[in-house]
Image 1 (spheres, rainbow, N blue to C red):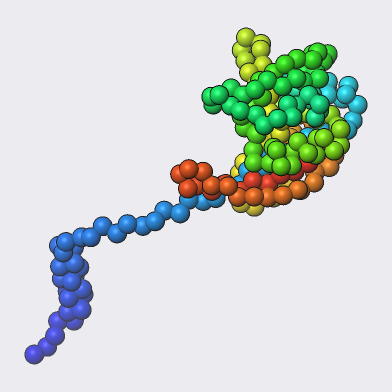
Image 2: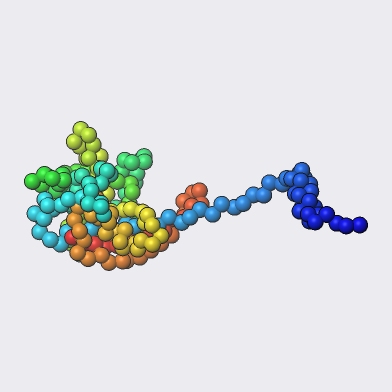
Amino acid sequence: MHKHPNIHLIQGALEAIVASSAPKHKIKHKIKHKIKHKICALVELTSDTEEVLNRKRLTPEGETPSDIAGIMTTLFNFETMKPTPISFPKRGHGDMIHVLATHIEDKPTMGGSDTITLSTALGPFHYSHVLPYMKETGGTFLGPAYLAQDGHITDTQICVTGTVEDEDEAPEVTAAREIMEEIGKRPSDIIFIKSTTVRNKKGHSTTWSLFYAKV
């Protein structure tokens, strides 16, 4: 008896039909969440205070950022910060801090001293590294503030923060980009300090890298 030349194809098709009619078992795959990488940069003003008036926030493409962070910036030092741990009664509403001065982008003059709400987005290095460095240097620092439509400052950050958007982008490049986008000054020096990985309540991890920058 001669076998049909396509017997193997026919058998394969039959096996596929049988397999498709068999009861299916759901296979649970454990989803691995990609670890985010975020930067936190403390920006020290080492140039003349008047240079703050010339700041201009720009994206790498030379455009004005759509983010409102940094339209206003605040100037502060360690003495203006509260020396005790800060408690946050509700999300987005922190304690008040005193700032030395403020500046709205494109304005020819600086604003005077003020008392402003401290952002709750402090990052993991605030107490362990940021405040001690501020105290040690005794310098003046710049932080991005959020300006509401009615003209008042909703809150101010101490550090510039951002996310590494590309796997090939070095964290220090991210830090420089975020400083330009939120402070409007190109850093003259960026120093890597430390990285740490933290996990939230849902089990998702984020790697944070801390930088000290000078403008």
